[in-house]
Length: 258
Image (tube, rainbow, N blue to C red):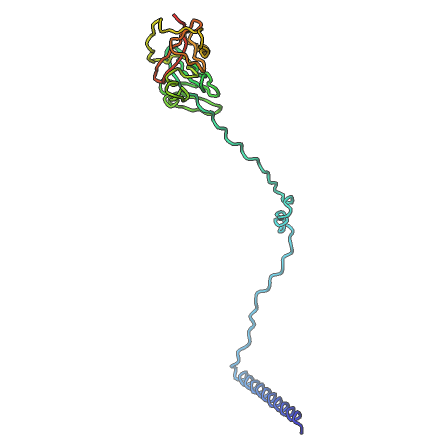
């Protein structure tokens, strides 16, 4: 007998033995089950039903409207129109306030001397405009301005021009301010009157920078023009130059010569 045939016979014999053991085990279990059924010890089998699987819902097109309306590559499919408003215009900056050079609380209409720059000083009453600003009211301490829809109240001492000469050397600051002022401030200390010999008459050689400004509206006085550096007491066209030292600093104006 060959070796291969021997191994084949051994495998068949082993399979027969295993099949016989399994058959015997099942026969034994069947006998035990019959015995238990006869004695009533075998519990009946119970079936526990499970919850049924819910059926699939039908597809609704409205559930996909949000996806189709918010496609990243097609913004025009969005039913909500996005209106892009332009940015608000920047807030308009208020112009600088005028400077104060004097105050006259005399008569029915008090006047205040204001200016927006060198040579632009003039006396004003309530209701008049100083450049873009309108004078609403003022007293001896405060003044109220109006510009467009804004109202500003300031103390007069905060608006005093501390450098009416516009800078320069002490020799230049000792003379009248280049822009001149609107007139004599109330309560100011007038410079001592000069003798007729001290008055300077214009018309000689070298006097080419003496000019008279516009009318201030106060008793025939006129303001000093820009660039006027003539000394106090100078007479020109029947007008005499006067320098006044007041609470707001030096003031310059022309009055009729006597």
